[in-house]
Length: 328
Image (cartoon, rainbow, N blue to C red; front, side, top):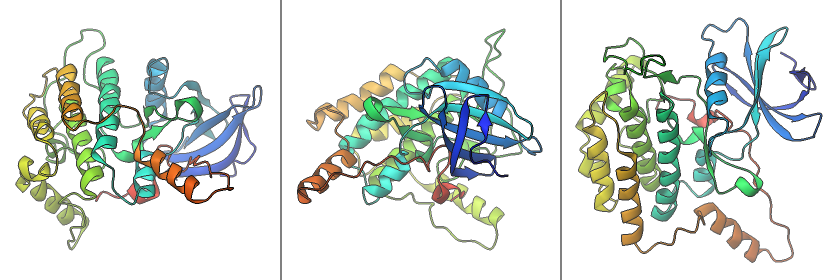
């Protein structure tokens, strides 16, 4: 579908394609009335798994919350549906690659503190994300460059009845939602997801950031079904103490706390973030929001005197990163 220079919602002009995946394409664009940068997500009217309306509704509710992109527009055009939000910067997956596939513990703890706050915000609204992974956390641009944003709510689901506020009932499901690399063990076993599953996925992200790997990455099998089974068995057999052996003790305790949460149980977000902060203090780190990539760029700038630093304004990871579009 030729999209370049098309006008969406009467004032958002498509400039170039910056990403895409199974459920739609992402374009960078501008608002023609004030020349601000925007991200435009397109979904065909013929999509077999329409998600954009659900995603737009979640963005509307979160738009005034810190760490979520500003919702600008959702509507039906002649040949497609379109969602327009604030343009953000690189994903944590992009930055992880930039930092040679390893984050320091200081960076991981500072990120996790913000990531946990984002999960608390969507859970408070009554939604579970169901696809927590590094590619769905983006840094802001400009004066928001130290703030972590959570995106991509196409797979999100309400876990509370909005009228009665009753929690959904536990059940078995036929489909596994999310990215298998980071999905919770229970989700992969075909159990309905709740808040505990988003939190477990976040823990897998933290482990991946620090170790540069997870025990179930790279497994091979004769077909996709067998590979999914292998991944699940590896997750079952991987002990928490082994997964978290490179971390201070509080991280292992946090993982055990999350794994032991009941389906309907309210997670104690204050307690969990306190555990992260305790590790931070024990390690004598300064909570200065100087992330690994910030220091790396400063070092590059110092080693190349006279040259202007290259601004890293990646938009290719909005909602989707090619190298993370696999289930492994």
